[in-house]
Length: 135
Image 1 (spheres, rainbow, N blue to C red):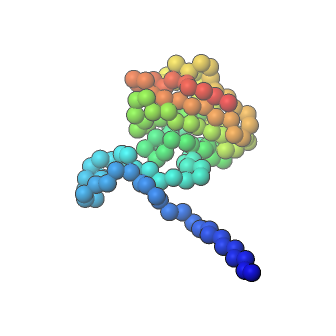
Image 2: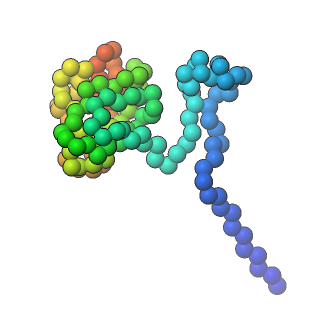
Image 3: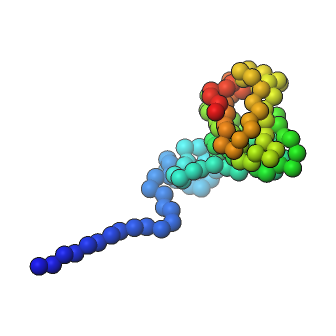
């Protein structure tokens, strides 16, 4: 009698599907890399320390950095209307906040998190940002 056991595993990452195919690199660049995505376990983009602007061109989930002072997000750039992004606190020493004013006047209340992992989800409607959820 014989018993055979086999195991297959893979280290690293490989893209099974990265988006719509383009004939040339120039077409991809002209399309601004739309419809291109690579799966990751936690695709959070780390914001720099003391960052006040989020660039939605780099992702949909953002993790705030280790700020050296109280910091507030004042704008989100390159966010398509209707697309939802998530801003999560990565450091509780000086957590980044969002005031209920200016472009963020339509959120339910000022966002002043106190613990690592707290987040707010927002989308753009016109020139303002609207809250979807917070935790």
